[in-house]
Image 1: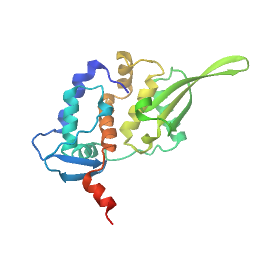
Image 2: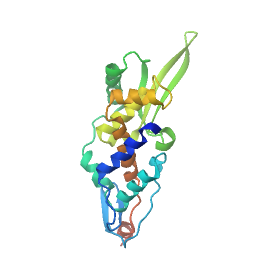
Image 3: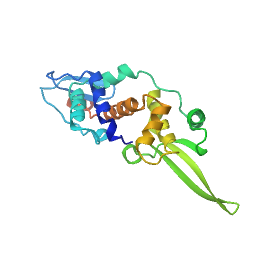
Length: 219
């Protein structure tokens, strides 16, 4: 996923709704769903790889949430449920329903599947490909969408965001203004969901704290 530079100011404002507070006792978030108490007033910097393209001020605010042990808690308040689209068939039907509603004239899709081989950073959570095959002496192209398997267990808003993202690529190859206009046409909260998804992925990869590590190795 990439973000349009013109949307940077809008994205930065969204951190304000998280209520980033400074001057609190430092906390380390161990993993998504678990937090630990204050840790000797010491900040542990976590590489914000999913926010690499964002302003340093934005990343500093996210780091503050991590230090305070509030990142998962904040996301959980917004996104408390997971969707029920768990199979390739269900994903295909879900995607085709969105396509029929918003992109009826776009190229047909031959396949939509979850793919456990997709690496989040390298493949930007999903892929859209054109497969060329010779049939009856003619070269025919088929369009496919593959979604990273991690989306089987995410809130419904994040699944919709990535499907909208990949559908938009059927018409717009580049992440330009026209691409993001199409995304927000299909999902008005697209930018909010993309940003929150990046926070969600960050929270899911936070390292275990020394306290929990000691608990696991205790006899």
